[in-house]
Image (tube, rainbow, N blue to C red; front, side):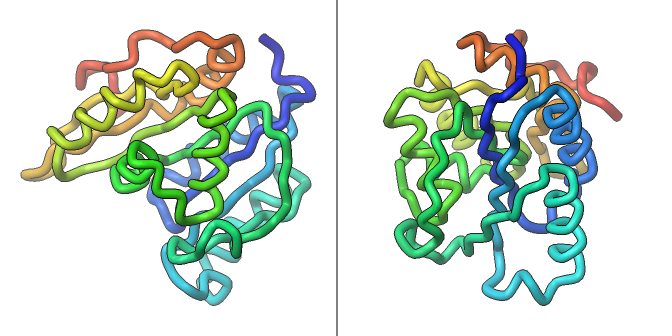
Length: 200
């Protein structure tokens, strides 16, 4: 499946430590001919005042050639921008556990989440790249629920010990490949990776 001409909505959270890897994957998609629309999910009310946000926004707009839509987590969907693009696919990367929980419960609060929910409702593919820690049992329950939706595709992920915590990390270097598979309505396998398959 070619990415040429495909319109991809790409929702990113603010200030994540894996952002450079995600930017590399967005570059791959753009190089392959995809039209990527960046949607920035802000954790604070004034992300424009943050140096990291400004730098990331500039890089994303240079890579994609499109202005980034910004939405606060506290914004209601109907207040967070009215631009409607008929995306061929929606990507959420990284997808934290609380975002996944909201998606499972269809709590459309911020613009990228509401767009993702609408995407699910109309049967278009959604790709999620999980990066989360904490309640692993609750996370895996949510994963089981979300993966039962035929149009949801996960970037292969697995557990890793960080100190006394267990975290779950997606193989972000497989994000572009997962997107290509998802456009063909296929899930890149295996979905759940053993720790030794994760990059160190």
